[in-house]
Length: 198
Image (cartoon, rainbow, N blue to C red):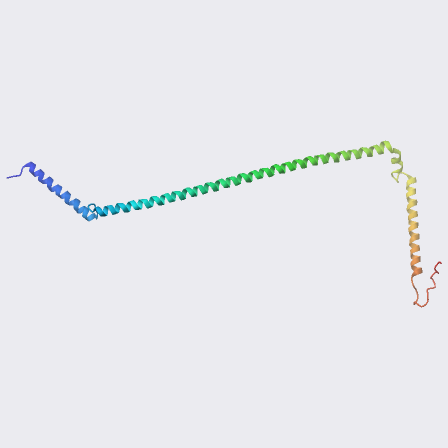
């Protein structure tokens, strides 16, 4: 008797099912999995959980360190900006003070220039008034010795009198020097010596 179509199909299906089952068991055996060993699977699960906890703790520490570094960097940048602002503020204050000093110096310089110009104008006005209104004849006749022969003669006479007086004083000094100077060998007095007045 020949097998029927349905029994043939059920036989092939059972052979394929048995082959798949044997292949799965062989694959699990050769791959080294511990699907059927619950103790090993639980230990591996605990080890993975432990590694995950350590990694999460390291990540939390790294996150805290990152936050602290970022806070420190932010504070350093803020401090740097604040120092820059203060330096700029001091620079502006110095510029304002220098500008104020320059402005005051310019004001005083202007005042001094006005005073100097006023003094020069006053001096020139006084000299002009003296020369043209107050003393015009004295200015013209007596101020210049070249123009006034009498003044010129007086100046020459005074110069000659002074020269004569200087010559007489020089001659007297020479005479006194000669008369008081010792001469000879020291035993006999000089013959040119005049007797001292009593």
